[in-house]
Length: 590
Image (cartoon, rainbow, N blue to C red; front, side):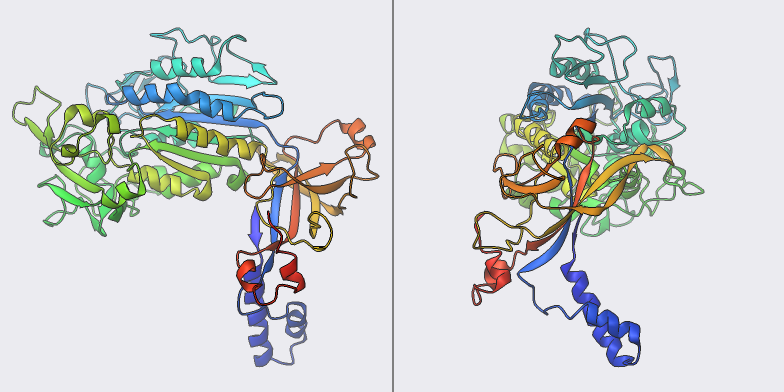
């Protein structure tokens, strides 16, 4: 957690002044004003920042991949499998080359359609355990041993690597190869009305769908949680509210999944499914439509439905003024609720339909128009309305594809994932978005791996600390540092809470080393490799007695640091007063 206290102090001081003028005889307010003097009206060169840093990094990672298994996904799964090793390698400890204690699970986007279709890929299906499921794969972890033999132990729910060696797959096997085998076994016969976001909900958070055992066995309260999704269509999460699906006579002139876009998106502030409005495609789709893609977004006006906690649902089998798909913020909240410290314990990444560059995004068009009907048996509709790709693999693209639909090129392209992007954005800096139209996924896999690795072993202070003695070598930081020790939440053992020690740790003397200090202390060192932002790395040195007694700190132990830090305004504000104490303390080069 990081808190910038400069703004809150300024607001408190202004209120003090206003109240003191209004009620000058009130002793408490006068005392508060004296304790919190007016801050400068303009930004100051320094501020106070609170940072929590893991000093005994908890190298536990629960990693879930959601892979779209609909018919167009085969080339994209091959790309993922080819580059997965870059993600895994990035997780290795730079000191000894070992992976973290790792659990890797695989789920699909297939949640069916509640039995809305009597046959086909979106109909009810029988799961490997014999369950008759109207909701596709139900978010169950996929450990399929055919058509390829993927070399994992019988009964395993997920792949696990612990204490430097595999737990439930052969010791001589590469986890990348085993996972790639599992991902390939998913096939491409899943429902084309994909539910990638709700698949995460079913797999990890939902109760009552039969996944409680896998949730309990997989999720560790102290572990980091990584969610990675690979899909070439936007999210159509609607279970259990399935009224919008089925072979509806009035919708036979459009693709089966187009209703997910027209009823889940808006452009220019207008709902695409509105009827009687010639400026939008309508529902059913009535005409071609084009709009600037960067002016389109996922709808937020979700219809009341019981799976979002509403008492009653909405009949979505008919046109509605509200959006029939699951509420994105609600889905994100359910994932955040899995962790006691979601800002530091969760990372969400998506490889999905999105323009390749910012320039492409600025020029991209949200487009609905005619395409060849994939159902060749429907001779009444040789063409149907559909949502066109927002991006194409550069090796399978012609500029004419924006105007003339190319079936082969569209198969390696992707529809714009507005709901996917909105879900990722819910996680702020912990959300990463990549285009599935890249030639390969080497960069995306590397970035995802690096981002998770930083969470697993982050000892960096990504803020410029005020140097209280600028004439001395090094940075003499002004920080209060305390231990924060994890313990199980008594109300929910899958989560952890933290106990903060009231006694602060002293700063180590120059030249101090671990095991050679009179008491536990902290020091600021420089390591540009581990801390590329500014090179400032925190070490906590322990006494010989403490090292002998406990050998190591409990995994997940953190230090809470309250430090004077330089603001982004330091350089500008200090041009006229470079010798002021605050400015001198921020003038050093990182």
